[in-house]
Length: 289
Image (tube, rainbow, N blue to C red; front, side, top):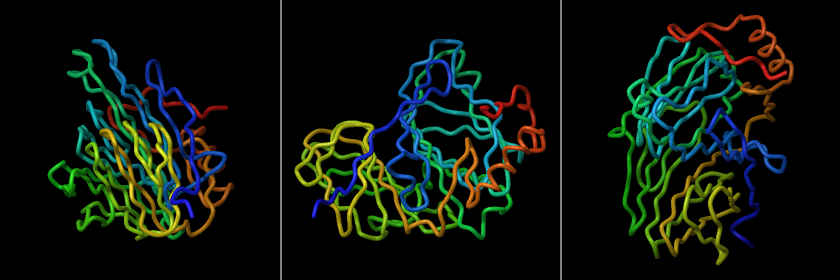
């Protein structure tokens, strides 16, 4: 039996001028991997002096977002009052719960000089009992994120436990999220800890079952331990968990177990009922009718 049961190709999106993303979840052929329901790979992009990332105020419900950068920095602001710059190796974990508003922008100093940004943002569907939990935001510095070196493979465990280490990032459901950098000729065995697992190829090429996979593709893995090899340098994300406790629906930036919840969130955003971001409440992103 093949260790790769499905290969998902991304579709391209534009978040703003010059900012293109490869989106592999949600996809018409696959809606989730464990509790992960959204995967965006943004950049790499080089901004000229005076330009930068500007994702204005927008809402979320029913999910947690996790951002990981490879290059550059992004300033997060939210309706809880948090202002946090995230840089490579650090983790921003935002729990939307019943509702939060945030923005993601290039800071003034970086914008003035121009610079590069490159990273991943994933969304985790909250378990049924936590859909209406209080919103929260937690930042973890690079020194807090455990990393291991395994015979030519460097692995950072962002959330969950694997490869002999446990991440301090607290989640509301069991899951695994890790980033691995494979040196030429190295191999990595992914444990069979969770029923649903996937690999996303960030850069380079990875080899599974003698098949080579290039960047921007997600490999949905089968059962048992899976071995990934690299003939050349490769950069991959590994994520998964138990199957969702119930089907999830997505509408714009909202995730919910029922369509009624989605429509309620939509109507509340249109009516201006969500909280505002202190110091960044102008020009909220409208619901895309």
